[in-house]
Amino acid sequence: MSYTTIMGVNPGVNAEYSLELKNSWGSGPIIWDTLGKFYSGKRPSYTTYEEQTDLWELHLRDDVPNHHKAVLLMTYDHAYILQKDYEQAASDIEQFLLDFQVGENRVNHWPEIATFIRNSNYPAIGFYMTSCGDNLFEGEWNDEKEDYDNPDWGIFWSVYDHDALKEHTS
Image 1 (tube, rainbow, N blue to C red):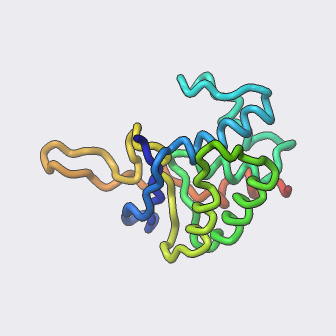
Image 2: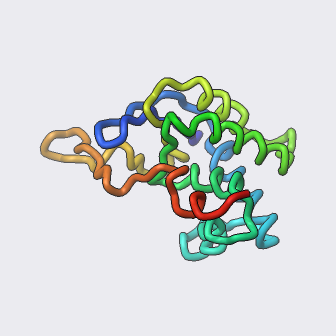
Image 3: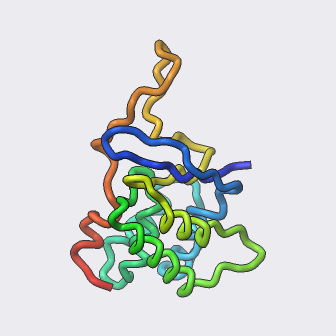
């Protein structure tokens, strides 16, 4: 079964596995399905990036509240949340969950994620949304070392420092 991992991140230095949540359908897909249905009337297909352009670009729209944008941005591969933004992040998740009721018969990790964020002592946290793909916080595999190289920290960014959240208010 796939899983989602919350990574403890020290931006520019390292990242470590912190909390594993079984069944990754309870993390990113909850957000993607909900926002896809609400804003475009269709559930994402998860086949290719190009088929999801409407979803991935929701954070650029003026009619989308900041808490929806923030929760969506949290699911992006290169995103992390700085400790200074933990309270806002947890509040945004909780507001998202109030806006959209997730069915009782569906796995939903977001209440646990909000609690984890609020109680975290890491300088930042990021998400490895599904174990079915590469964990970019690990860096690239180096065959010679038989270990991972450090990630390219230049590709990572802070959710709450993203222009989409700085330019608009909800």
